[in-house]
Image 1 (cartoon, each protein chain N blue to C red):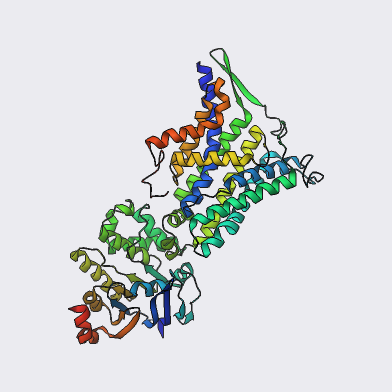
Image 2: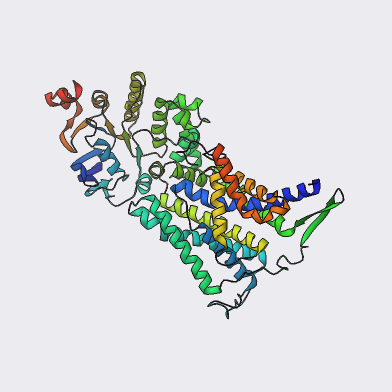
Length: 316
Length: 235
């Protein structure tokens, strides 16, 4: 264990952790306004990665219904990322319309929406598999144009490498977090959103259209999900239609660890799990996927409400 | 013509009937009160008027227009403001933000800022606490905030639900002075209150609600002399 390794792990952890934070915020926003976990969030994450891939590369591989098709034009990566994220936001809105609103309107038990969102997730994932197959797709290595693959510098005679994608991961995540923080904290719409989260009845008496804000929340949530799916996909490859499922579970660990419904909690939880994975000693790296849940277990023993959670019955 | 007209209003919670065939009206500039025992259905009537609950039957007209099918957020835009029972301030937002959200349906920034200052004159206690989160206020201050927030939308009709609930007697009279003052300025108010004596003092007309229906109605001064009212509600 030396200083270069520590620094390398710190940078790796911050980079992946910031994406976990962005992804987990998608859960948090919906939870704070509806009090339910949206289980389709992992599927939107997957969908975002595939959409961006399609827009940037223009075609898919060997299997699936779309294997012979290709798009007439492709977008440069930043544009593909943006359009992919926006389309994911629309997918998030579709999830609200299909899985949540019909049940809410009938006054059904909120827990039922949890099951229907899981149903939507299964449909999306299977549809992806049907359309483009189950292979692993990797974004081409020249996706960032002329940018170098990595920045390498040396610390105490040992190299520390920061991959370009890691910088993009971190920067894109920070932009999203700052934008979201500004919107929720400073704008009229953000205040109305917080009012809706705190008490939907009161919000409607103030003239706030609760259903429109719920729909907007699902859009933002889907956008965050699709964006993080793309970023993870570019970083590690799209490991098949089910790759969002494991990240979906990790995202749940993040929000519970940080404190359900807490926005700063989701950010902190993402960074803690990202850093926890990065600081795993190299000879234990096969246990990486377990880190999130070991941390979750350990922290819940001490703080059942999560790191920044309020009393258990409170949200946001 | 009445500003608010309610005809044949019925409200059910599941199989339980809470409001049966209620008809009432409020003229512009008038304070009208609904009095009655706990659980008589006063709050349910108010919640049905502002559409927090969907009535099972009945017609609502606001300023001559049939608004029976409109949701609460649209009614606010038409000029109906509801200060609900239990105050329901947004505990996690500041006093200032609560007031700002009260003006959510308006876009005239300069006039909103002016009205905000007017509220702080009307409720000086809120002025000292404008940066504090509303959850830290006392019950009386929260009630003042709830009324001020409703007024921020510049309503043509103010629905006030149990403004005296849970307040110390000195605060109750303070709140009722404010209500009387609002009435003197020409604000139209439909007031639900279990403190019948105070409510009838500020209201020109009174409806007496018993088990979901209206059993008596008339000018407050007349009803205050009616034996059925004095026995049951003013005793």
